[in-house]
Image 1: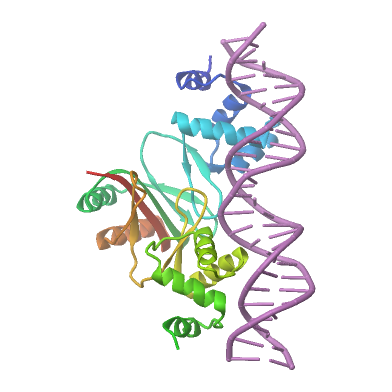
Image 2 (image 1 turned 90 degrees about the vertical axis):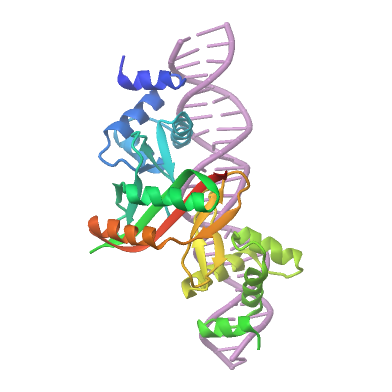
Length: 134
Length: 134
DNA sequence: ATGTATGCAAAACATTTGCACCTGG
DNA sequence: CCAGGTGCAAATGTTTTGCATACAT
């Protein structure tokens, strides 16, 4: 029984071919941040027959199950990445579209402080930096 | 000569009815953050005949001219707000959806620092905090 | 077997664009 | 007058959905 199968069962999803293939792909791809289209094309190239609609459905299920995170970067489409369990933010190269992950505890702390000064308990945040290579 | 006309001329845009109306609306609306659809509906309700395509074109021109800022919050559509000249980020109340603006120079500085450590020149960023009232 | 998942095509959105007509300077 | 702006409808790109078929348990 593979790791993927166990992960799927753990979150209450039936073990089906598309789900296993997509999970494997996200796990093994050198590019951690993929759009639904990216996933779809990668599977086709690997000779797997999966419908684009299924890719969307599965990724959404994975998101709800906490297996992946969905990010709405600029550009009109969402990107997905396996939830590593370690929180991080993203920096997007405006030239190549490359996504770099980073974590800065100082920024995290300041966000919490800002929220509290405004009278809120911070429950989440989205931080994306855009820049060009220097 | 109204303030709106002057602003349009200043950025090199012809003074046309749709542009003036949209600028007035953004200036006077109690809700500073509006989608293209919001603007379109508000104008219709005010008895103004403007095409949705024109709203999009005008808002895009305003953005390029620096009159408004476009934000891609979660939810699949962009929201626009008049550029007050003072940069700020947003905190969204997860309970009421209310949007609060804030500015924190320390965070701004850290973002720049992070980008540079990653080898990029920071050209933009998107920071949205989510929280519930305490 | 049987309820769920899938694939396909069509629908649903938000946004953009082509084009004939209208308008501001 | 005439370059540029507008309205409409059609095109676009992304994501969702309806439905008949295929699959997991």
